[in-house]
Length: 600
Image 1 (cartoon, rainbow, N blue to C red):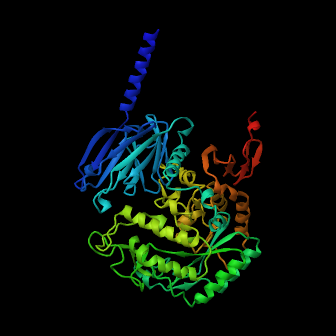
Image 2 (image 1 turned 135 degrees about the horizontal axis):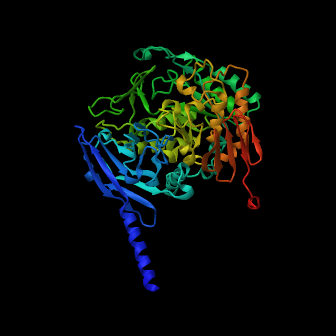
Image 3 (image 1 turned 120 degrees about the vertical axis):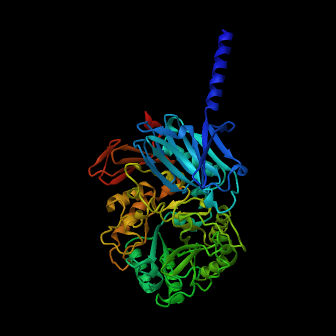
């Protein structure tokens, strides 16, 4: 009997060894002449974990390569196979196509998949700012993989490539399970801290978490329909004076909204998209510095938090503080062009210079205005920073990220919090709020290849980073979009089709109602009040993680929070019943946590 037992144990030991040896990946390198070389490697199983690692030492990364792919054997599928995959912007795919592809920039360092060969969360932990997410189908064969853009590093590769495949099993073998793994990774290594911890002894952040967010763009440069080459000629247009801003604040207060954080946009020198990094003097057409301070004090007396919108990412050649030796340079030794805005030609800033030469002066000027809210800085979390080749302050992308963290921390130290545009998480540990998570929605993806968008970012970061909603379209979510004329992109702003769907999507994803492009001269703030009243009933959830999310019926989605509460969102045109309760069309119900005796 003992001999049989030993044989059985030996068999299982051999089986486990074979299983471990079977975890393989392909390293695929593409050179400038499009020559491709491949090699197969054994993944290393990390001690005590169901995590399998591919590590490529920096010395083995060809500096002349175009890109390098890491493709696990288990991250392959065939058309018709059961399973799914997703990438960091939430795009969700099933294996239904013969040919197609989808890629996105690194928004979070997470991808996931479930194929007949296995299920895993892919977390890139080395050279993480130098890759894109890819899903490719060719002749019915799918691959899900990170692609490292070696040429685009623009410096020598500066660290090992590390890609970990965290095996998912049982109830964790879902996109929500993959997101939970990444959240745990971020928390365990101290990259982020829960919001509930950060609000302790920080009343500014606590007030922000429990308030709606209202942005007024006091000035703009209307460039819809204007050829891009003529944008620098577009003059500043006053949309609201500071006096009109005070009137809007009073009407919001009179409508019954007490918990509001108010952000000035287009207040600075030259107006919105003006000559950054210059902030002062404040335009006289708006009311000047005196009028702005009066409006800030007026808002504070109403009980509102008051803050401003700034930009440390852009350097405009027409700015008084512009100096070619301060901005980023490209690999050819020229000032690194970013875009053209109505303020003029825009170059990438170098965040080492921002930190050393600009930010302290900016903060002193902002403090002089009397602000008391979370400071908002545009663009920074909407894209990864460009590398800088200026010989006075060369920085690769990872070094730029570290400077961005230092700048953000200065804002937090000065004002109690830092917010930015989107949800790219390279500075997650010093980001308190994102206006929206991604610019585009599912309408800008091939619907045959991408089946939809799932809230992986929210599962990772709800309870850590506040957000206004999953998409640019969820700004002003409770307002209709007919004939709108104030947004930066009508197509993205009108995504999801209807006001009710946009409003519900913002709620489903745990959004903090955020307003921007509405008419603040209107005397009817009832759509804002509707969102405000709803938020007062669910704002407590901002301090809890999203533990699960899934579709439970056609157009019906369930979200479970870490305090046990369950939200069910019904996008149907007819009622839906859940656990004996009828949920109205285009609305949701929040179910309380079950007590232990409720299961019997």
